[in-house]
Amino acid sequence: MPLSSQWDIEAYVSVHLVQEMLIQAGIPKRLGSINFWYPEFRIKVPKIDGTGFAEKRVDFLIEDHIRSINFLIEVKSAKQRINDDARFQLVNKYLYRSNIKLGVLIDPFLIEIYEYGQLKPKAKFEIEDPNHIEPIATFLRTFLNSVKMRTIAIHASKGGVGKTTLVVNIAYELAKQGHQVLVVDLDEQANASLSLGVNKADEIDKAVSLEEVEQILESFEERRELIDFLVECTEEDFDYTKYIRPSSFNALLTNSGKIDVLPSSYRTLEVQKIEKFPFPQLRLNRGLAAVSGDYDYVIIDTPPSYTTVTWNGIFAAQYLIIPSQMEYLSAYGIRYPLIQLKEIHKEWSGTEKKVLGIVPMMTDGTNLNKKITLLVKKTFKDFPLLPEIKRATYVGQSLHKRIPLSSFAEQRPQAGSVARQMINLTNQLIERINSLESKEV
Image 1 (cartoon, rainbow, N blue to C red):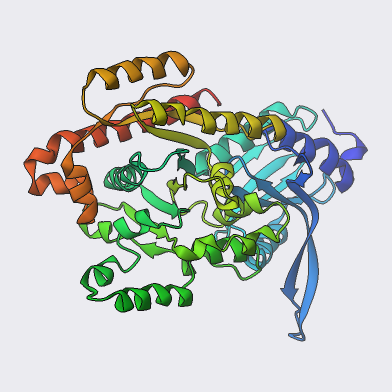
Image 2: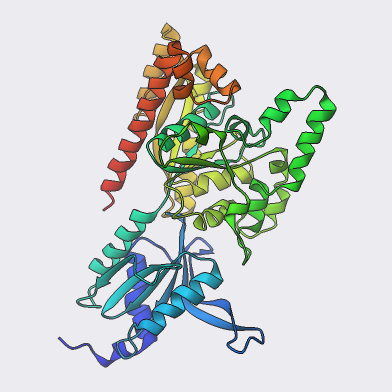
């Protein structure tokens, strides 16, 4: 059936095909006052004669905050269809100059998705009828879900519940399975950064005076770390690799998996540096869009206090894990993160975070532990209680030595029980994520 002449007009294709596709794919135009679609996105490209730069406009920049993915869309019409010139321009000019990895070409007959540096499409879909949006939106949604990173915040409103233990060991167990893992340390105490071997922990251990420790800490002023990442993530020449460090845990891995760290330090307290930006709680989300495609999982270590930096972690996370000791005060503290998540969903429709579950930490089998566990199950029945991590001196010893539990257990077989608990927890988290995502398709 021939198309009407309206499809020869690019603006008509943009409104009736592209914009409808985005909405049905679950990418809203805006949440509250925040735009997620940026039409006529401006990019500077060099002039052919080498005399400077010319400004080009791509039809859309899309910020998909749900999946931490940014991509460009270039729209063509039935009259001026996708061709090799359009493909070359998207891949080698627009994606390169905008520092964005993914680009979409679309006309009424075809949609193609490209990655910077690759002239062969990562995915394509032949459109049978541009008036029938659902299969086109399903194609886009399925593709974006297939390439998205899984971002997981480990968050508790009370300190001392074993949050760092979970962060470093879940990251290691994921890397052991061959995954590429990025740990984002948002806590100014930087325990995760220290445990993962990127905050000069060995030098601090060898220091013989407070003056030496102070000199080591002052050296952090010269490096790029979390606070700089949050400040600079929207700059044109932003390169995320300048901010991350490889973990010392990588030396223990025998496969293709790895752990990188976006480290924190006392400098993370300088929140005024990001509060000057519009919507400062979305800075991490925007920075992680540049990382998307290079990591399978991002594990976010959040501080127990609710600062702008903490909100960055919660907004950037697709999933949340809440560790808690099975004691009255710790269990009561579970309420606050859940209340905050409901408020986010209420005010920012479409940004609902999925709670993977509550992890009982440092359990010891006492009657009080058992009583509180039953109370937590009853009170928070909508959220699963994940495998417990029992109290064991080996947990603290492995953190002190900056060795993951499963590797520590190779040296201390007595630590095998708690190491297996961590492995079991990680596997159940993966199963739960897969189950939740299978329901979205």
